[in-house]
Image (cartoon, rainbow, N blue to C red; front, side, top):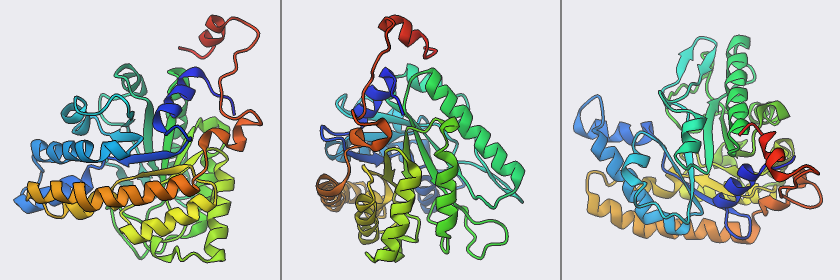
Length: 343
């Protein structure tokens, strides 16, 4: 894999000086809007309440984060002025409302948002989540593949890193039915691995994978058998990758990270494992802040220390060759080289 200037710069902005990603997700929508709406007994959560919580996340957790993942509906308009310019800015592009069909789920962009707009507003990377099951309907899988391919092409055109998140989900015949943004219970490791293998193909243009545990988080027990599955996932990814928490509890996610780092992961991009305990105090804003500054910050320190000790430097991933991640212009001038990238 070769890196263009924009992709190299964006990836460096997302990591620390040692090439480790310690990134906090603030882009969740249903997991935040749902509890707020339920407390208020309304169908919709008030914008100001959702945005206020996201603002607190940025204020309290950014110091320990190398980058923050923000959404353009709530987090960016409310929190961009308090986000440190020393932190990487990742912007989510996919709509949280997916289309559920008999053959599987279909993803789409947030209305009126594009890769170009994210680049123009100063984002360091574009993040997209696509639900995927290798055994979903052929038309659904083709649509999901085309969707991801389009995002990859646009990220290449605008020279911005593409951070791609994959989640398996229950099909109509599965026992564990949920539309919530949580880990699918009873998921098959083979489905996770086959999904990673598909989107690791060069035509999708993925720069960094944000991956779920290939086994249920509760089953990440430190055994050699589980480690072998993580090792295979890292091999199939074939480029830098980080772990997502998918709503796992603090102890469970830490065990997942142990396996992931042993398999070559370069860090994490996590949300609820870090801040959910504090959010459960809603609507007591003082208690929420205390929880974020206390238990959430402590946990962030713990998994960051773990990443410092065991995560892989993304710049030294074998996908970049012997010299590591770098931009190497050709014999032509830099100006003409860069024009070839479509910017």
